[in-house]
Image (cartoon, rainbow, N blue to C red; front, side, top):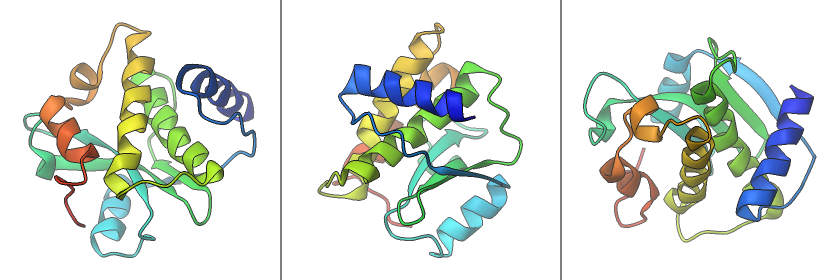
Length: 159
């Protein structure tokens, strides 16, 4: 995992100008249902970040998202779904997304709202998937409307 995280940091720094910070986050595996439950009960810190996949409906149905990963700024921990193995471009893209948040936190990057943190993370995830001829829409059913909602302060949905 250390070599993979290092390679992702180099790729993110090269492609998106994020700092080349090699202080690696903690990685923990958690059941997706548990992540979603904790998030919706407000037990995660307010500065959490999440990668979500669309489950069983159209990409623009944000309410149907299943949380598959979360980054906790305060503990520098990436929580991945318990069944995550990193064997596919889609699974690896989730780690890329969360590493963006880790590098943003390490750099002390500030945004108008937490939804704006998601914009670069989704851009990086999309570019990563594109390396394999895939996209957020094809792998996670996240379309342009879902991205707009997930990355816009005006459209932010409160937990």
